[in-house]
Image (cartoon, rainbow, N blue to C red; front, side, top):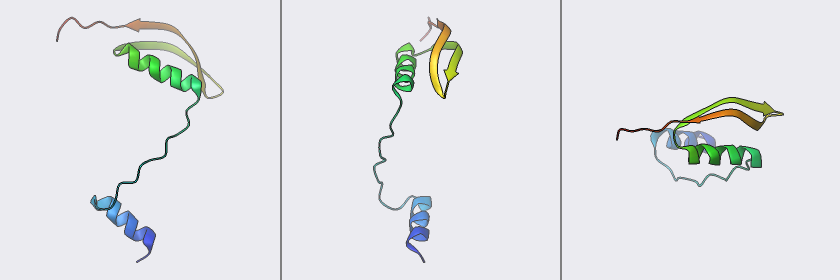
Length: 69
C-alpha cells in the first residue's frame, strides 16, 4: 500500500496525527469584512459589492436586536 493510500485511510478512519493547517493569507478587504461580521453578531448585509473578487462596500446594513434570551 502506498504512503498516500495509507494516509487517506488513516484520515478517513479518524486515526493518524493531526497536522496543523497552514494559515491562509487573506486580503485585508476580506479581513475587514469578516471582522465587521464578527462584531455585528446578528444582522443583515444587503447589496454587498464585489469588485475583482474583493468586497468593496455594503450599501445598506441593518442590525437585529434580540429581546428574548
